[in-house]
Image (cartoon, rainbow, N blue to C red; front, side, top):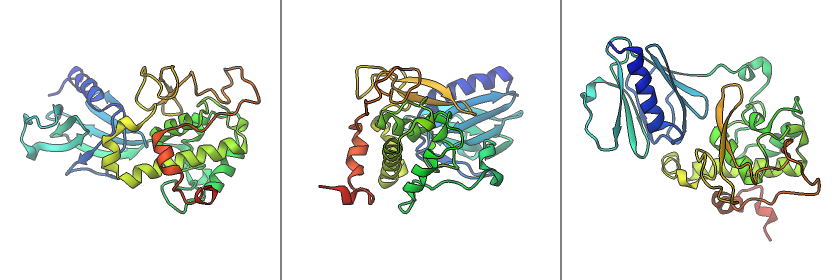
Length: 296
């Protein structure tokens, strides 16, 4: 019978192997609920008694109830499993690790409750992954956001404004435009909003163009996400991380150069951030349909 301390140790091992890394494969023959998709990044691993939960950057949660016979194992890619394949109830892979749950009593997925998704709170915003998404509408929704003091790091996860960004690309899009995640949405200019929406759409569609599996293997292409304490690709500063939002998801940004509209930083009102030379943004921005007409 797995004791609570054993499950806590398993959760710790899973955080080390999966946390902050993109998933390349998910398999579960007994899953109840939607299947987590490759390319999504594991953000949290928590244990509660004999229950263990894994959460991805899009709010999807895998819940396993281990009871008497269930257990989680962590293996390096290619390492032989200590139990037979027939006892596998969940398998989660990334580039270096395989996490396997054997003999769990319950295996289900769900999304964290979010009052903003309730029909009474309004329709979902445009899906940036779709080529016909109305980006102008997203800009307008940002500029007319009901709570002008809301932080941009929170607003970009409000699916009434925009759908499909997820936590990874809210971090990357804010960094790419130099906008602080703590910037009040009411401070955005139309130019800021246009640059931010274009950057987010560029990054999301770049991932889809390469395919989820390919994008998942190339986490090195990310500028700030999951790089807490590492050097910023744009300036001599270091990437920082903080929990932000209703569900406390990790947000990554560069405090040194990502200061546009940051209320905590004194600034020259005439300063305008320059579009970042992010490799993915440069490669795909020029090919986007809404930018082709601007090419010289």
